[in-house]
Image (cartoon, rainbow, N blue to C red; front, side, top):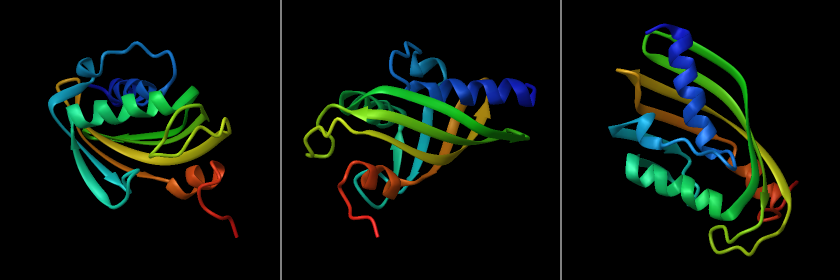
Length: 142
């Protein structure tokens, strides 16, 4: 597969987070998919299976509407694709026990995907959890 093919697969995976996306995660993520979250939305560093990751995305959609995904940059080398992304969404549902704020929030992150046989088999995600939480008013800004 070409680097452009791999980038396209990675973009499809990021679009799972966008509102109104009807993509089937099983068409993008291998059955053995492993997602490394640093930090996890609930704290710490975690590793998620495909099913747990799909559940995480579903919970996000329950808490946030009007979610948009912007791909800011992608770099591919070998079987890896690094993507710098930006999410913007409106907090309209329960999120980690916090009532909806109806605030529009934006945050960024970087994800590195490893692709085999046209599927993502492993991802490493580092994202700006502070910016999301500060935008929701859940942490104090200096």
